[in-house]
Image (tube, rainbow, N blue to C red; front, side, top):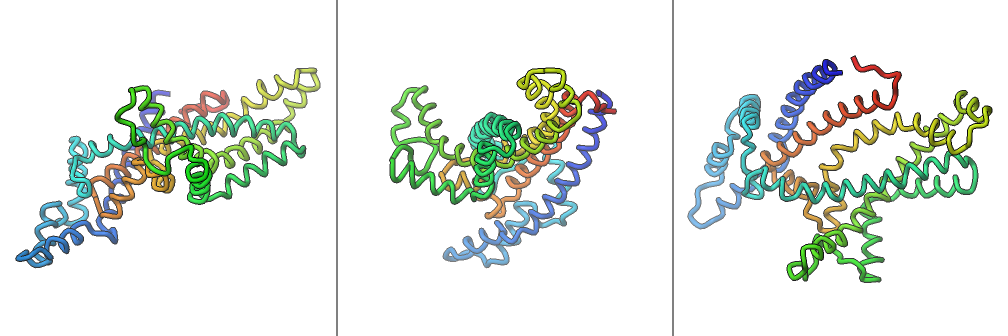
Amino acid sequence: MGKYILRRLGISVVILLVVVFIIYLLMRFLPASYVETMAIQLSQAPGAKPYEEWVQQLNAQYGLDVGVVQGYFIQLKNMLTGNFGDSWKFAVPVTQKFSEVIWVSFAVGAAALVLELLIAIPLGIIAATRQYSRTDYTITAAALVGISLPAFFFATLLKLIFSVKLGWFDLYGLVGRDFQSLTPFGQFLDMVKHLVLPVVTLVVISIGSLMRYTRTNMLEVLSADYIRTARAKGVKEGQVVFRHAFRNTLIPLVTIVGGSLPGLFSGALITETLFGIPGIGYTSYQAMVAGDIPFSLFYLTFLAALTLLGNLISDIAYAAVDPRVRLS
């Protein structure tokens, strides 16, 4: 196990270096150029230098006056020493801006993931154990509706009903107007209240796929020979389903859960934008539109590292739940 983990970590480092180069290459050739935008603004001031001179000065200031390969190694050296630079868009250190917004997205993503697992897996099991019944058809129809709903449409519908019509929730923002006058516990409840609709949106649009996946795998396991043998021996149906069938259904689900790790930190761009949540999804979108290379490079590299880590965790967890799998 130890040798396997070390080998995978070594491979992951090589992959990450290649991914960072590709990300940096894409950032250098973004249609939106922060330098050109700033040069246009600065050159329009009375008595300012010409646009071309501002472009040369800003390129030298931000390290864009060198080639792509040389610039990549400069960025890589800085990243390895913990120097991720300052965000051009937000004018603060990249890590500072990142730490300000990442935990909001993590809270929303973690809450949505937990609710998704708690709802989708039991419903998938129920649908599989009652195949072709009215319950199965109802759960399947609900799953298909959730899969088909666009995030922006469902989020807007929730806002129309619960914010505009009923007035239960605010339309936008993470906190209410009287946030500062509340007690610490009251402030916590106020933030939780403002996250209800975003979390519901993410759960509804993502629950259908996991529900269908659980149902499909459960049906496959329930048709296996050892399940028929267990039933023939008189084992109670509850034990057959949860002790024998569900345990083997967990094996492919582990891969999905492990792959969800980057999603906890990637944010939900559409949902965060519609509800005015200052999370990492909306912040990274602003940085990319502005051509903010330091912030975009750090954020995308962070997600790439999380993806590699999630795959490693999935493989280890897969071996833990399936004794037939050996890591070597």
